[in-house]
Image (cartoon, rainbow, N blue to C red; front, top):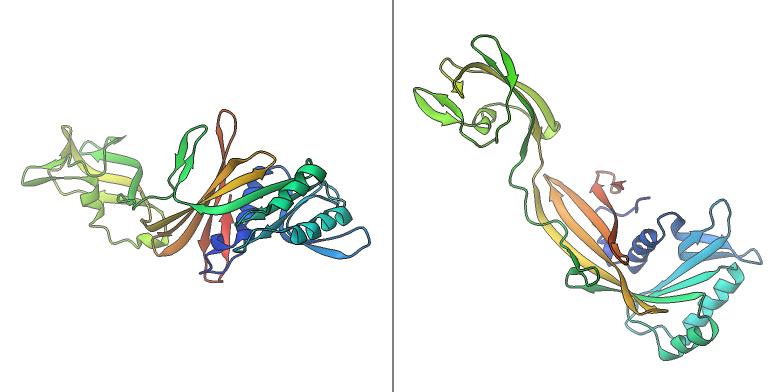
Length: 298
């Protein structure tokens, strides 16, 4: 399930969006919905920042209340959320706050709601490090310099024999008695192809007399070429999901990479959730389109 967002919106600065991304990673097999509405016990529609809905039912198993303020969540706001949980007959309330929670909130949770309330914070961090197991996620780095990939390369000799070859695109392995040796990329640069319109091209290159490779006199090269759009202007932002109650620990990291692929803007999000022995990953890539929304793949 993708997130609908405007073309230039920095959605990761929205706590509700981040909360949804994290909770979806924590509950991969449940119905997790952002900004949804459900009816309570008396039929009144209640808005949920994030709702976890029972499969095959219309009831709320859990919901997330998200607050981004400079002050900690106090007992008044918390009391309203508890009332919502009771009238929705939800089994769990997850409260997320960037600033944290006051001590009275912790006291009420510990004494009155120890098994039905989870308290957590989402905040920006400097890197994507997870301590246990020790892992660090870097996001999209730098630029991909090699734009070209050769899915298949065939050659035809002067005896009309056809065979395949496996060589590096920049290796200058094609010899000619009257000039310098050339590489596959040297041949590619002479083709006038609109590479932006298609990623794969089947090309035939008729060679002038005299070219050879490993003792074979060549007449023709047949190439299946992939154009890889250059990745550039990468920017990575890291967010931590810190559980405050019942057990204080860093439950997950979200790495958001904002970058360019060719002339198009893309955003990749990866959520890393550490387990006892491993790190579970989930994510998606979104591409800007002309319709001011994004297409998302998971």
